[in-house]
Amino acid sequence: MDHQAVNQSKFIYWASGIVSICGIVFEVLFGALGSYILGDGVKQYTLTISLFLTGMGVGASLSEKVLKRLIVAFVYIEFLVALIGGFSSFAMFGITAFSPAGSDAVFLYLITFIVGGLTGVELPILIRKANELGVSLNRSTARVLFSDYAGGLIGGLLFVFFLRPYLGMVKTAFFVGLINITVALVVLWLFRKDIKKLILHFSVGTIIVILLLAGFIFGEEMAFTFEQKLYKDPIIHLEESKYQKIILTEDEGDVRLYLDGQLQLSSIDEFRYHELLVHPTFAQAEEHKQVLILGGGDGVAAKEALKYEDVESITLVDLDPAVVQLAKQNRWLLDLNEGSLDNEKVQVVHMDAFEYLEQSEKWFDVILVDLPDPNNESLNKLYTKEFYSLVRNHTNPGGAFMVQATSPVFATDVYWTISNTIASTGVHTENFHTDVPSFGNWGFVLGSRNPIEVENLTIQVDTRYLTTKMLEGLTYFGKDEDAEIIQADGEKVEIPVNSLIDPILIQLYENAWKYY
Image (cartoon, rainbow, N blue to C red; front, top):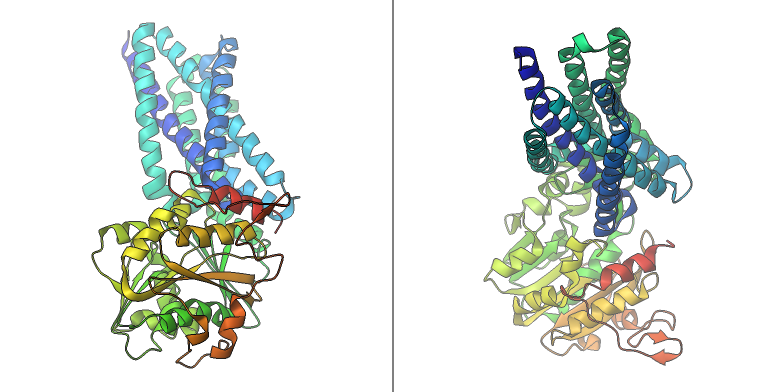
C-alpha cells in the first residue's frame, strides 16, 4: 500500500469514529427533544432509540446497493446527515409552534428514522472502501467497528456534559452538522484524484456549510421566536441549564416561571399555592426549629417559612443551581421571594431530593415537598412509597410534612394515588385543595405521625389568602373529585400505591393531562 493509500485508510478509521460521535449525539438529541416537547422521557427515548436503530438496520441493508463511487456516496450521505440533522432541532421548535397538534411527534419520529437510516449506510461503505485500499476485510471491519463503538461513548459523554449544557439543543444540532460536513469535505480532499466533478461536490458542501453556520449563529434566536408562540406572555428570560429549560414570562405584572415547559408559579396568585403548602404544616407541627424544603428553588416557600420567628434553620434542597441563581438575581423573582435565599437561616443544597434524604442524618420539624409534577421517571421516584418513607423517617415525632400533589380535578386518579402512597407509609394524612387561577384547582396532602385535627389548626402569621376559618372547608371535595375510593364501572376498587418497582403514576399522569 503506497503512502497516500495509508493516509486515506487511516482517515477512514478516524472518519468512522467521528461520524459515530455525530450519530450518537443526534440520537440522544432527538430523545431529549421528544422528552422536552412531547413529555414522558422514557417513552420518547425508547421510541427514538428504537427508530434510530431500525433506521440504521434499513440503511445497512440498502448500503448493499452502493457498489460504485463509494467515496462520493459517503460524502453525499454526510451532506444529508449534516443538513437534516443540523436543522432538526430548529425545525422541531418551528413545527411545534405553528403546526397542528401531533405533527411535531410525527416529524420527530420521521427525522429520527431518516438520520438513523443515513447513519446505517455510512459504516458499510467505509468498510468496503478500506478493503479496496488493501486492508483485509476482517481487519477493516474490526477497526471501523471499534471506531464506531468508541465514538458512540464519546458522543454520549459530549452531549451530556458539554453540548446540551453549553450550546443548547438548537446550536448543538447545527454544531454536530458542521462536524459531519467537515468530515465529508476532508474525505473529498483526500480522495480528490479519484473523484470526478470535484468542484461541483465542493460547491454543494460549501453551500451546506454556509447554511449550517447561519443556523448556528442565528438559529437559536429564531427558535426563540418560535418558542414564544408556545407561551401566553412575552418571554423575558430563557436559559437551558444542565438539567432543564428555564423560562420566565411577564405581561402586565404577571410573571410566570416555567421549567421544561411546565408552569411552576404565577406572581398574581402564587400566594394561594404557597400559603396552603406552608402554613397548615406549621400549624400541625409542634415545633418549627428545623425546616426542610425539597424543591422550591424559586425561594417563595422559604419566604413563607421565614415568617415564623422560631425557625432556626431552613435547608432547601434543589437539584438545579441555575434556578436558585435566577431566584437570587432576577428582580421579578426577588420581588416574590423577598430575598429569602440569601437569608442567613437558609442553607441551599444542590442535590437530588431522594439522594439527600438517603444520605442525611438530620431530622426536621417541618418538611415541605414542593417538587415538579411526576411527568417522567426521574420525578416519579419522588412520588413513591420509598421516597415518602424517607420523608417520614426524617420528620420529628411531633413534626409534619406537606406534599404538593397535582390537581384533584384534572388528574383525580393521580392526586388520590399520591395521597394513598403517602398514607401507605403509616402516617396520618389530611387532604387539602384550593383554586389557584393560573393552575386551576390544586391539591396537597398533609402528613404527620400525630393525628391531624383540622378544626384545631390555626394560622399564626400574616397571610394574603389563607385564614384559620377556611382551613376545614379546604378539606372537602366535590363528587367529581372526591375519590378516596375511585369508581370504576360502578364498582369500588382500591386506590393503587406508587413505588419504584411499580411506577404506575407516570401512566396515570399522562392519561390525565393529555386533554389539558
